[in-house]
Length: 112
Length: 116
Image (cartoon, rainbow over all chains, first blue to last red; front, side, top):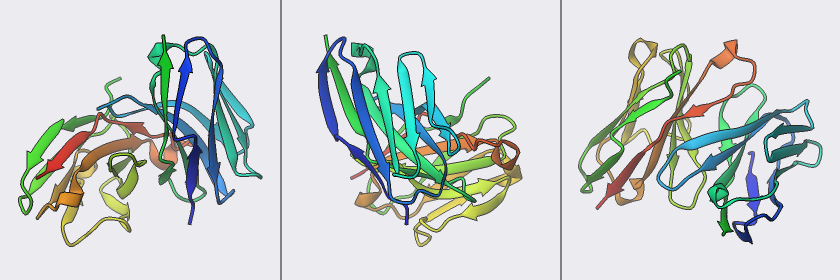
């Protein structure tokens, strides 16, 4: 059974700092990995999707890496801003299934 | 392109009452998902439809939860009777399905259910 773990559970940083969020999964036979952002009381916004054959994806100040063999992914946020404050969720899909298995998320607070 | 629509956005009911949620996926998306997100947890899949057929409902509490996707478009999720532990956000998502190689899912805003 696939399990996804995110560390840390919460993170508070000053504005402008670069930061890394971590995600690990127990079964390396994944099809893809997605990073989502969730604002309070809102749904999920997809940030980046990495296919199992890829090593990383970039979008603006965000960079996500994937090491499938070790069961790890990181989300790097450069020059953090107060508007980045949200909960970040990592999720994986297994080969043959479209079901997303989520971690519990990392709650990020960027202080002005 | 319109996103995934859900209604209502909020619902408060007493335990043992019934409630229904509605979802309209992105046009052309064959696969529709319902997830339950309890406070402080990641979303958990309840049921997955491909067109109007059920692909996975292994984590749906079938004694009280039911879902349907008539005509392969809109979907409704029902809880009857509700329990206190059903308090959660219910998220609907859709994807292109097998015709889309990435299986990327797009989420609606969710319905926040409070059972008192």
